[in-house]
Length: 94
Image 1 (cartoon, rainbow, N blue to C red):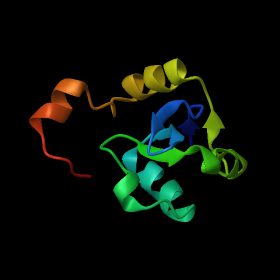
Image 2 (cartoon, rainbow, N blue to C red):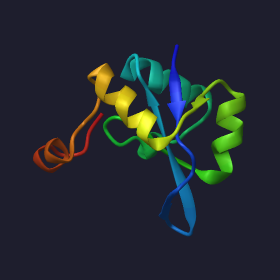
Image 3 (cartoon, helix red, strand yellow):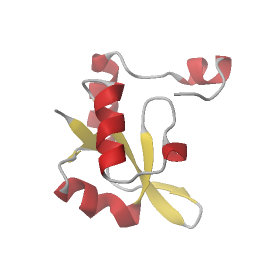
Image 4 (tube, helix red, strand yellow):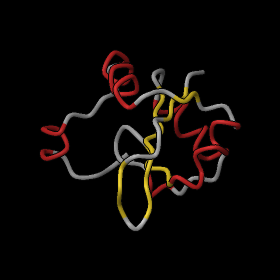
């Protein structure tokens, strides 16, 4: 099981946000998110958006902290990455 989280560095809604991904499967990612009570609406096709206030809790719960670049590289290698072009073509869904 490899769930990854990058540092909270993405600003929105008066906080910074991290991305939570799996480099194994979306099923694994959804199970981890459900176990940690992340709202389904925070899922964005290949990752969950996580507020900075939850970062340490998720790391303590088993997410591996990595740089943003490492997170993207591993997501691409997994085949789970949804590109910007794909995001524009398809409606938002799981």
